[in-house]
Length: 289
Image (cartoon, rainbow, N blue to C red; front, top):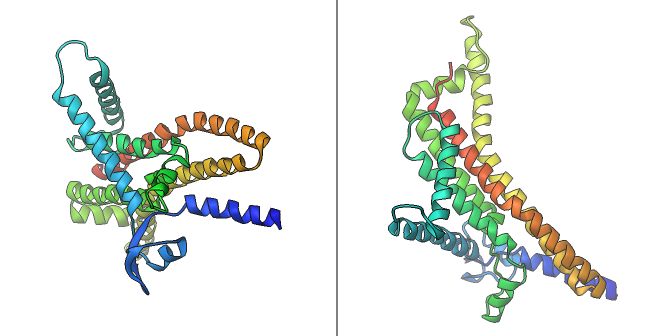
């Protein structure tokens, strides 16, 4: 019975840390904050993950205001401190854009900078101890608090959807509606036989639409999957702290090792999301013959 209760306690601990602070319309209780994962699920699609919104918007404001402060305090000569760091990031992003984007569009570099820094900051929250912030909010009466926005598929899907809209917009703008339609129906299969052409158009259209939809899906799921898995490992390691001194010490060593390794994952996932965005938009600007 003790082992069974311990398993239940561990399962409840994991579920608690994976549950968002959710606000929405409950079919029985009206507008409310969900008191459990079950109530959150019953609120349906239009429920809001308040913690995800809070942390993602807050980190976005942190990025904008901190970079704005560096821009307002620019001094001539050799930069130092925060200005030097910001200039290094801007130069790094500029190099990546020049290497991957072969057209001329003043939106791409600012977009790439925003994506990289914002996603990096959201990922960086994964290095905060898993119990620290949720415990502080529980002391204030808030039951649930997930602080890593990129572990929420709503955030990663929203970012990917924004990129997808830009892909469609520039595909139509650069090639025209007819050119974009020809791109969807004219490749990869081609023929000079008039009777066969309609069949190839349908096949090409299906394949190209799948390829088009796969772009935002891959962006979204890659970022979400990597960060969610990393967060889950942190939570699983944290459960070892209540299993005795030896397992607790072992868990502490694992936590440190995983955190050090995760320092590489945090910027890497932001870099991949940014790079694929640049490449996809470059493809949207290019005409396929």
